[in-house]
Image 1 (cartoon, rainbow, N blue to C red):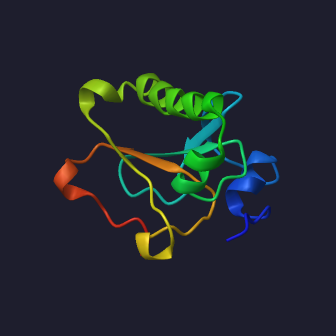
Image 2: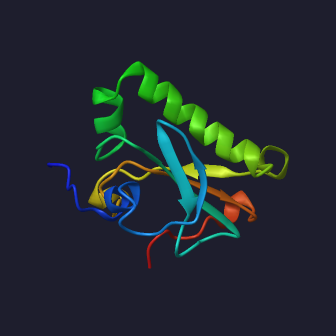
Amino acid sequence: MKYDENNIFARILRKELPAQVVYEDEYALAFHDIAPKAPVHILVIPKGAYISFFDFSEKASPAEITGFTKAIHNVIASLNLEDKGFWTLSSHGEEGGQVVFHYHVHIFSGRRSNQIPPLHS
């Protein structure tokens, strides 16, 4: 699959579409999901053009991988979720539930982990 430069996350990165940003650095952008599935539902996306976890882990530089991981940590810390509890999720491919083909990680909090909601209805 070829990366679609016009996917919604690419457009958010280019500031063509608005987002309620909670964190940004040179490696990642984090923002509130527009259709939250939990009281806290944040999306963290790398700034590079990566389709999925596999694409990112195969092609991203070590600095991008480290920076993206640290960005997820920084979002969790900035929202004080470490003590409250949270979970992260990344889907891969259509059968894995991926809808936007730009690698992204969901951060959820505010619900017990045994109440993980469906991402797409």
